[in-house]
Amino acid sequence: MFGNIGLPELLIIFAIALLIFGPKKLPEVGRSIGRALREFRKTSDEIKEKIEEEIEADELKDIKRDIEKDIKGHGEGKKVS
Image 1: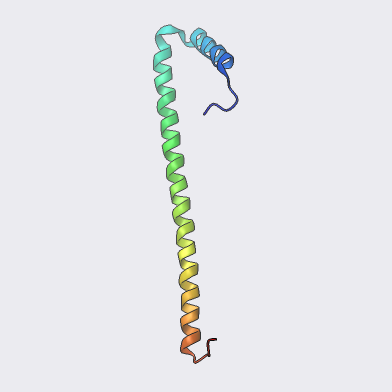
Image 2 (image 1 turned 135 degrees about the vertical axis):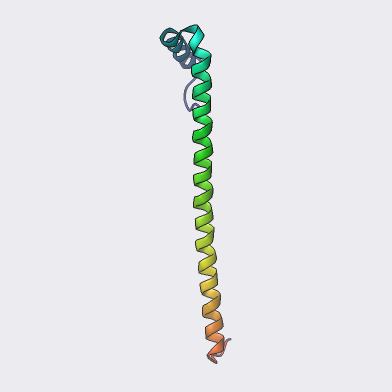
């Protein structure tokens, strides 16, 4: 989740946040960041689902088009091997 951030880097980030926000405000800031990340993840998942649905719909349209071509080809009296 954090990429290449290790324990020492996290401790430094925590110490800086503690100095900036103070010990009383830090839990509230953490909850706000957590909510924001959760909303971002939810939104990105919804976008991914919509993209996948559109791709699937396009594939189904292509399959339908191919089937209709085959049906028209057979209906015109073409000999199928």
